[in-house]
Image (cartoon, rainbow, N blue to C red; front, side, top):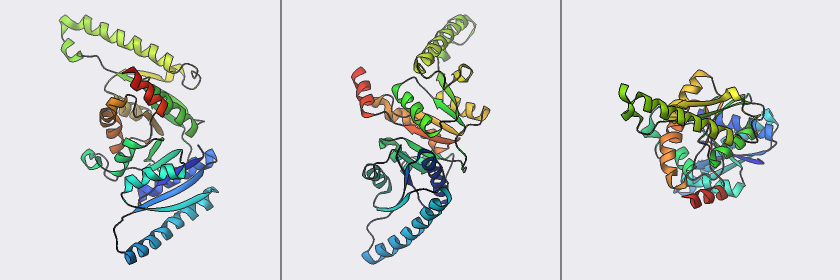
Length: 292
């Protein structure tokens, strides 16, 4: 990663994201671009006044980061619809990573729908880091939520770049199809048989998924649980405090909206920690489309 784009709304949450972006840029030897998007459609005199004021504030933040972290930092002001401008700037700046702050109303999912972070997440073609924790320390504990897809593998690779010294945990959560209909004494053996089969398949899938990278995730840190994925992720982070959650966003293109809605959207609306959401490359998406 050679260039990081950090989008800020000038709030405290935005400042936290900028500091994390600076920590990562220093560790990666990458350039850092700060972006703030201002509203368009203002009269020319007001536009010029607001742009001058906002650029002064953003340059002040850039100067602080240059001095504190010894970085190359560039300040940019964009004009227009915030999420559209952010997506355009990714390409214009040649960014390899996008960093944004968390939503300011944790726990209120309805307020998250339609916000800048969610809209960017749906269309972002590079890894998106949503920052919650205010810390300058390197990431030391990373949880990878995996469905054994190629997108999840790319999430692991991206997380390794951001946290090369961290301890990695890999979590796979499975459910038993129609499991609720197998309750009761008469169906107990059938349910246990299905659990045994699903767990064995998950263990085999984990081994294949980590093939060639077994040293990164210890055997004891490979977690397989029977639970809804979003619940399993939050439970694991509560049990073992985690600095960074890595997750692949679009493992199945035709279902990407549903996957984002059921897992990543809920996590981003109320992040339990920093979240790295990684889309697959174009080649990976095409490979999946060919398999459907």
